[in-house]
Image 1 (cartoon, rainbow, N blue to C red):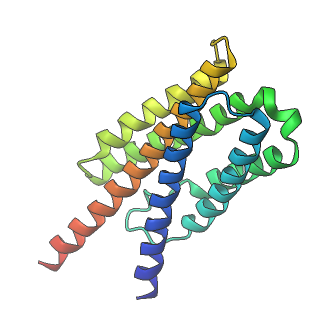
Image 2 (tube, rainbow, N blue to C red):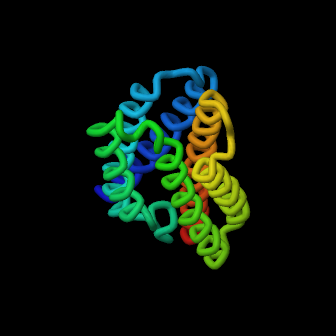
Amino acid sequence: MIIIHRRNSIKWASVAFSAILIILGICITANPTISAIFLCYIIGFIALLAGVFKIISYFADDMYGLAFEYNLALGIISAAIGVVLILHPNNIIRLLPVIVGIFILTDGVFRFQTAVDAKKFGLSEWWLILLFAVFTGTMGLLLIIHPFSGTSLLMMLVGISFIVDGVQNLCVSICTIKSRKSIISKRDN
C-alpha cells in the first residue's frame, strides 16, 4: 500500500512539474521581453526543484522502470544547473539559452532511449514518446546553436522548448502509467 501511495504521489508530482514547465513556457513565449536576470532566478529555482523531484522519483516503484529510468542523472544535472543559475545569474545571462538547450537536448536523448525501451516492452505508445523525444532534442539543439538574432526571438524559442519538454514529460508519464494499469487488469483477469 505504501508503494502504491508513493507511486501515485510521484505520478501527480510528475504531472504537476510538467504543467509548471508548460505554464512557464507559455509565459515566456507570450512575454519574450521578460528580464533575463529574473528569468535566470525562475529557471534556476524550477531546475533545482525539478532536480530534486527527478532524484526522488528515480526511486519510485515503476513496473517497467521507464517513466523514471534516467531521472537520477537528469536530477543531478538539473539541480546543478539550478544552483548555478540562482547563484550567478549575471554571469549566466548570455549562456542561458545554451544551458536550457543542453538540459532539453539531454532530456530528449534520454527519452529517445525510453521510447526504444518502451518498444521492446511492447508498449503501443512508444512512437509517441519517440516523436516527442526527437522534437524535444531538436528544440534543445536549436537553443545550443541559436542561430537567431534578437533576444525576443531567442526567448520565444526558450519558451517553446519548455512547452515541448513539459508535454514530453507528461506524455511519458501518462503512457507508462496507463500501460501499467492495463497490464495489471490483464494480469488480474
